Amino acid sequence: MLTICPAHSHGTEYLLRATLTKQVLLTRAGFSAELNVWLGRSARNSVAMGIAGPLHSVSRRFWFYHLAEIGMFAVTAGLHLGVMRAIAAGDPEKAADASDRLIDHLVQFTTQTAVPIKIYPVNEQFAAEIGDVDLSKPLSDEDQQAIKQAFWKYGVLVFPDQQLTHEQHIGFATLFGPLEVSIKAGRADSGKLRIREDLADVSNLDHNNQPWGEKSRQRMFQLGNRLWHTDSSFRHVPAGASLLYGRTIAPIGGHTEFADLRAAWDALSAAMQNRIQDLVVEHSIFVSRAKIGYTEFSDEERAELPPVKQVLVRTLPQTGRRSLYLASHAGRILGLPPEESKELLEQLTAHATRREFVYTHRWRQHDLVMWDNRCTMHRGTEFDDLRWKRDVQRATVSDIGNSVETAGRPAPALAS
Ligand SMILES: [Fe+2]
Image 1: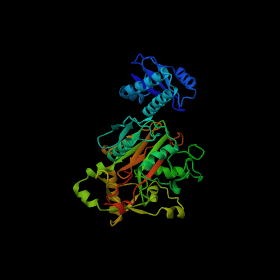
Image 2: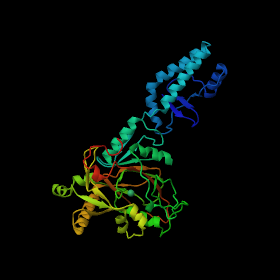
Image 3: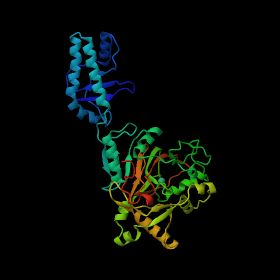
Image 4: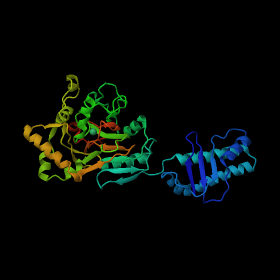
């Protein structure tokens, strides 16, 4: 049985290990040197070959190669034989061509993303972990499609153990649509951004990478994230998907809870569904911040984000499922007396966040968690934010339009 492991990051060098076969393969040095000297030119790439003992698991991803190589082995062996025959026949040109074909085959085989992603649902309808995918690399069309289908089905996806640069984080997010730019009112006290402005800095760090001050504006603003909300419902065009990446995680606390607003809708009585299905709600970031007692915003900041209208119930084009659309940003339901409006929003929020509709994500470092803001709410749980560093960064994908203006429109929301 064979496996191929990328041995070096440079070039296309590979270590080819054989255990099933007894065939004697040339060592990497011998193979390269022999080709280089004998062919009178540098081999285009070096290929490492050697006999290995029993295979040890190098990483879980490589187990795939054990199986897949069974099928590919005949091709590999045939090409290798071609090189040997050309060398034996004293035909340098033919040997060069044969070695190129062998190398092309190995490169193609070892770089293709042939492992289908694995989906581990947390429950049947809501939240899933996704395995066997490396988001730092370009994804095959099949993997992209599988991830989108899982996203629309489960609403929350967790991708553990991802090593992402800012560019790779953004690159993955843009598969789902155009990104939002973070709002001025939520930025650090100094006005200096710690990270690029197309990522929202949801950390507790100042621009010197130190935990924020107790009375800092940034802290007061972000404490609002501990209320149940959906991202950017206070914008005319709200957020579709959010992708939060955990670079540094607090050792205790600092979880993220998610509520499934589709399941919450399904569980409402028919009478309540009829009562609320056509209602429109006004949302504002200043409503949610006022709820935690923070109102220190300038006229300019208030003018930048006037109240916007959103539907209270939406239909998701990809699945046809209906969902509540709630957030702490929701101020009043249009057409209802203030008291009745307040009471109804509180009643629906309490219903939607009952434990049976909630998944709690306990972060591990380098998790990337993405959620569908159109049909979920979330909130951060408490942690000792003056003591621990929690560096989480969010790429936010815009929805296709305002929820009132796009209601009933058959166009797909989020890139399909
Ligand atoms: Fe949020």
